[in-house]
Image (cartoon, rainbow, N blue to C red; front, side, top):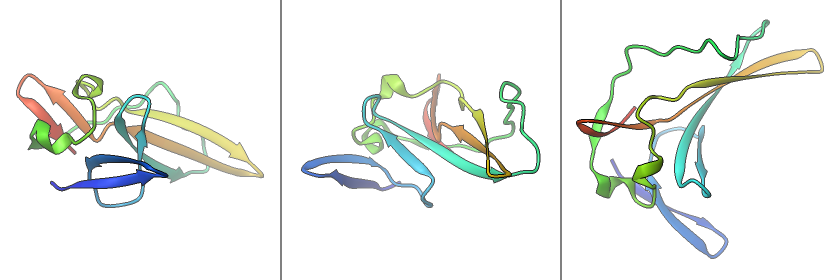
Length: 108
């Protein structure tokens, strides 16, 4: 997995590179979050999110770049947020694309 240098004005960080544009870097926590927009006619229950059978790939701590290893969750840490506006219902699924367990650090 490659690292990418991302610039915010004169500030530059190195973070793991993923395909797609739905990844956000949180500079205060130095972690990545993946968010998927779900178009749906109904609201999802926000406290009933379950994600199973996730396939992970091991990565080294060097591949984390500027991410803080202590801020990487032990579980996928999924959550759903719902919005309704102008007759459109949307749900947003957010999760951590990188987790750590007793065997090391892994990416989704």
